[in-house]
Image (cartoon, rainbow, N blue to C red):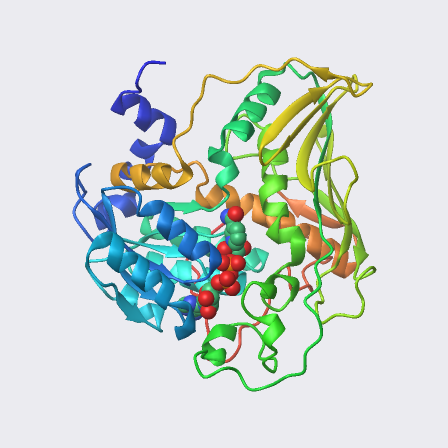
Length: 441
Ligand SMILES: NC(=O)c1ccc[n+]([C@@H]2O[C@H](COP(=O)([O-])OP(=O)(O)OC[C@H]3O[C@@H](n4cnc5c(N)ncnc54)[C@H](O)[C@@H]3O)[C@@H](O)[C@H]2O)c1
């Protein structure tokens, strides 16, 4: 394959459009700094030194034109591993913060990695945009639909480049599978199925004092204050609806993303117009988790004869524990998961497949390139906001017990059903306020 020219790159990424936007012009396309040359080092700060924040930082530090100047976490016990890693790799010790807003005040930091739990993403990201920083933000982008809209509003208002951590978009098997579906070779797709197996138990523990290393008040942040329980913080917060959205947002945002992308020619995919869902905490009842362990959600489109289903359940014998399937009118199925993809005929016999001629750069490199060229990353915030909102719609339908309607013009829930749920909106705890910009969806 020929090497793409800079013009090809700009056309592909829509960089020209971003650079020309009035806000980007007003700020200078590079935000806090003058536009960077390709050789300039991108200076990063990490917010949330947990599992995925640390992993993203390590991937980004593989690039010679990236460095890390600062780390921030509200639990000081989470920092030493990353501190040593940066010191050894970069040759200079990073500065350490417990308040991300102080880190954002630094003019020498160009961009941040947001690796906090989901209930913190919206504030972290909006404040980063206001401070003129680009961001690599973990998925799902938000804890509810209103936050997702506010995040996109801030990104657009401040002209920031934001990649979301749905890295399947840069992974060869998903790129190939999506190209095949989009080419029409599978045939007319009438149904997409996405799923994750979940049997996680977080156990039962009594409330206690938080360890001295953790500022629990800061960790809870805008969410409702609940007494500290050691099994509800690091990693496990995703099975607690006050801080996560259960597996429907945690994994739905990965696997439903592929379904939605496969039904559209580009990132700005069509939103479903309704969601209904049944399920609950049916299997794991003797546990402190309150996320549903069983979910069957169904999405429909008023103007297209295709549906999408989402399942959270126990293992599916003989099948990968997660995945996305496209089912064609004649029964042919394309199944893709982390690590592979297959095409099966209606009897389940494997058919020959063709890869695409697209060989994506890594998700993290794509972001760095887009930051430097003011481009649109593969998992641009506005695009993954759509997927995230689709996941929230499933939760809104489950918790309201109603079919929730979506108005794709207004990009909002139509009618009342679903609006009363935490998947749509919630009041922040006193002292926390999410800024909202007029040009949000
Ligand atoms: N893309 C992927 O494949 C993938 C995989 C795993 C996790 N994730 C996402 O990454 C994010 C983090 O997940 P995790 O499993 O690493 O969580 P984690 O609990 O291991 O880490 C989160 C860290 O953020 C810190 N933190 C919380 N509030 C903070 C604040 N206000 N300021 C600074 N630090 C704060 C916590 O103390 C903790 O160290 C989540 O959004 C999750 O969905 C993505």
